[in-house]
Length: 384
Image (cartoon, rainbow, N blue to C red; front, side):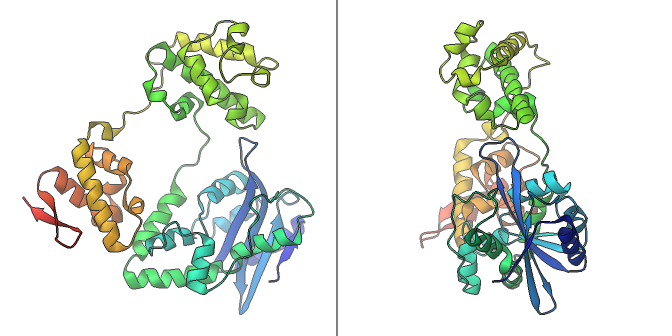
């Protein structure tokens, strides 16, 4: 394997100029976010073909501003990635946009029955290629980066264009190329804006069980935590653990001593002015009016009959078995709940999912169809 290490802006400018003239390029990123609020980009791997020659570069984004890649991302070239979701967040933060044209080999693999479709398993099964052994503890911000780490990073894009072409051919043969395209476009275009501090409390486990003033306290303290974490670029759990936040909401303290007695809190979480700010947030939360309180949306599925949901999931599992797909790729319980509860945004209401299962689930729920054993261990539909 040969690749070039790019650690100057002039060198990266040469890369972006070269990419402007290619039909497709492979892209991957390495980043850390374990101890920060925002993901920190440390390395970018890019591969493309120049005639019969393959080119791979590793871009040291600690030394190079990756923003100019935004022009390439917005151009006509196809960006091929694997498991692109987190990488897209990175690109939006650092380059100002996501690719205009995207292919995701993990998505393609899942539509071909490869389950979770890791890059290693796809390369082995489709191309007979074995990736270098990964070191999950690699510190991508270390410089100089070891030769082993560089080789591992470069391998992530070395065969990606070839893999994408092979998977595309298989998808076309089984008639699922449009399914994969639809899924990738949904991934590409989904909103990736900063989280709303006033709804941060919705992510707390057990938030829906909070009642009365506990909701307002949870909203205001969680909002303070979110804003503080973003301003200091620290994980929210470092600012205030969930356990402590729920304890504060359930029994709001009104003094520093009471606050320090909350389970899950210690001096690290109430240093400097934090204790005062938390107490101020508690005070605001206790007097929130109904209009100021941001309640979690009612899950549409909460109104869907459980028996019908179970029947629908059984049918979806049967369809997944017929199609050699992971059932959760077709629909999750939440998808079914949203559809049967009338949710307009249910993924089963449109596209390939509606074709494969959504329309049938609606007919089952409406009493127009029933499900019965087919005698061979599967299910069949019966008109009612």
